[in-house]
View 1 (cartoon, helix red, strand yellow):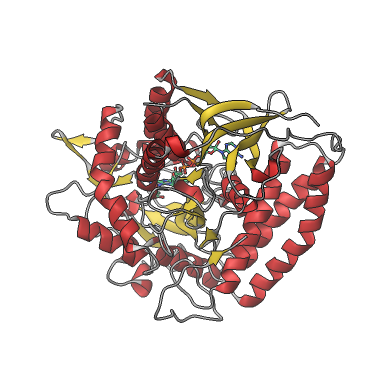
View 2 (cartoon, rainbow, N blue to C red; view 1 turned 30 degrees about the vertical axis):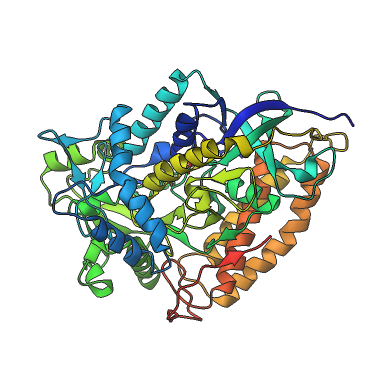
Length: 531
Ligand code: FAD
Ligand code: SIN
């Protein structure tokens, strides 16, 4: 088989969300950057973010407060150095977004700060209730205008190119780019680069109900793991307490800022404002793991389909002004949030674990940096504090770029690489296998690896994964890749990482709550999986 130098770039960035575009913009000051996205350039979670971005901007607030809130929410599993690193860089990150033209809400010239669960102060900058869309648009505009950045949508990366793919075989895990399926032509293209930044987002779609977009299938985590990078704290899957319950619209988030601005939770049958029983002090503004468990408990205990979130005691103009997007969306579904409650359920929302990175966004693999939701940087610990995620994307996207630029001269040009081999595969004649397995994984993850866990349920999930493994690998080995197949393989890989990690953690901490080990160990330890 002939060798290839593929398409060679200075830097390859996988992902066009907040993390990927932040890295690309910084890198493009000096280097040529190719950004790949699966589907549209706006297909990641970034465009869906509602509440906002946390930053200490109020005179009455301090970095220490934000650090403490982050560590309390994170169940002490956070890495303090990382928490400080991110939080101290937040005001500058907001300044940069303002320079890029993000139209944050203001009050008499100052940025308006809203509040969310787990925050002791108002510190969330936002663009109404659709912050992510505005941020994504501003980053994309800047990237599109930058002559050093090439944006390529509809590219599903299949795997990283590593030393194993070299002509002169190298067992080293050095990463030289990625193989990507061009969704339009159906061909797999080899993209080589001196440096690669993984910014492919979370794995939320491994669960049946998730607020995350369709493409959040953990591709980045699975690719890095297969290439040899360690992955940590994958059991820490965050469930958002308030996803809209609606038979037609399955994954519409009702932002935590609704509770931040006074929204209350009620049992629709008893009428009780039940948060008093679960966290009398912080009530609806307790950290997310506590409120999600409370909602889950009420739903299970009373056999409910949903609980009620009610902000109709606030003046209608206040509600419409703060939540124009949600208000309009709900009106279209026959719900007027200015007059009555919103039916809500918990749903998977955020992947706290991921590829292990240091403060320079370096992974274990030379040539591979990673940023954003696909990583575990030490910021979130056992439970992410609301609105700390976009912030992490900006800080680590920039850190990756700075580190790549600073060590540029030590990075070699890519060697000759084996091209993608399709000689032994055919087109699948049974797409139904993929659909069946997708649904099966998402169902057993929801039922066995959800908000409240037991060892028995986790073992059942592990058993299902073992059974599916052979089938999926066999399918992958025989048929031409499609995006659905790539995603199925990655979903299964991530399900395995989550269940393996959950079985290893024999305590309850933050988002990992198991009836078999309800106590919290005195010492917080990461669950680190080594390939
Ligand atoms: P994403 O924005 O998810 O981008 C991932 C990118 O990778 C996409 O471009 C995708 O196409 C690409 N990609 C994926 N797989 C492949 C592949 N195989 N090949 C090529 N490209 C690939 N956080 C906050 O801080 N504040 C909020 O208010 C907030 N609200 C949220 C609301 C919702 C509904 C959701 C779902 C999340 C919210 N979050 C919020 C979390 C936050 O939006 C995400 O954690 C963050 O946007 C992740 O950014 P990212 O750049 O890491 O990944
Ligand atoms: C929300 O708006 O409730 C989501 C905020 C977040 O995920 O940080």
